Length: 359
Ligand code: UD1
Ligand code: UDP
Image (cartoon, rainbow, N blue to C red; front, side, top):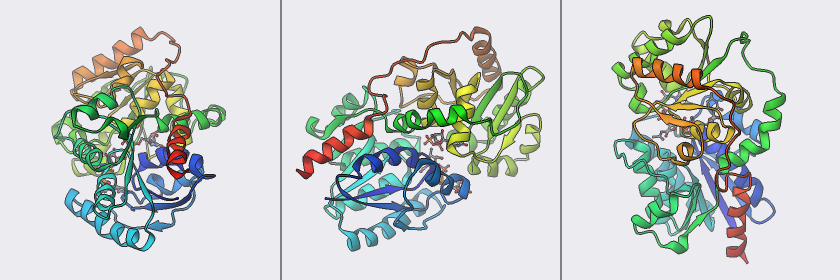
């Protein structure tokens, strides 16, 4: 059996790494990088850290509007698929590369497996929600990461036989690399006060000048002698901060380029609190038992709230400042929760499904 994995953006790499590893003894694998993310700090750095092989192909698609980026992946990936004819395609998560590859595979009659199927925010203004719903419609195998996945998919008419609740592959990577992150010194010279770790990149936050201005004002108000704000900045966000002359407002924060996985994990596990709009970071903090405030009106990852210490918060200065202070005041050391099938073995369960198909 020959399997082509399609990856393209930062969160895909953490998800694909354990699946590639688990399938190694079973099948022939090809790794196709779409090139959606291309900066060294958004792509290359993760291959060494996560032990991912160098991609066999890089489609070099780069940035663009949704239509341009999706269409470019489709055109380039179709060519590569016709040349390769794998038996299965595996796509990850909810980025434009995920949907583009799934559409191409299904039209060529090559079955698609979707890792992280069934997550729903029920908010179609999010490009990721459109990508999730459509990818799940054309997938033949749907690997869900949390309990809510299967009921969400059944509601959309997906046959039960296609759905496999395997758990969270992003947590497989975390479980494997946590001991290394624990030994690692912090990537920034931080003082001896608690710190809040911030990540931001969601269009709903960073592409709206008013919202981004409110968030930046909140960070400026919180940073001080008793609390540090550590903010590795995603390139999309940096571009908006520069456009709207907001970068200088962050001079009181410890801003940085996007960090490698181990450096970021070393910070996450020691943060007093994480403020984010990332999907993966909501999951990682939930697993670690670190308090997380998610700057969004909804989440497609309810397990992070049910089991973890994730809470939703609006992108408004007062709400953010009050929310952070509340968490810091209440902070009691809590034992990390146990989340169903977030146990470091999700990729092995995926491999077991393919082993049955290949037999
Ligand atoms: C994408 C995903 C989002 C995911 C995020 C993870 C879609 C629709 N969005 O958002 O779901 O959460 O990745 O990080 O697929 N840029 C660079 N260098 C890079 C990559 C991007 O400078 O290596 C800049 C470019 O200005 C680009 C912008 O960031 O236009 C946005 O990149 P894009 O891949 O379109 O979306 P993300 O915001 O990264
Ligand atoms: N991450 C990282 N460096 C950073 C910020 C995040 O390695 O500076 C990791 C994070 O630990 C998680 C993944 O990137 O594993 C999440 O990706 P991102 O937030 O870009 O995308 P999302 O999960 O929102 O789709």
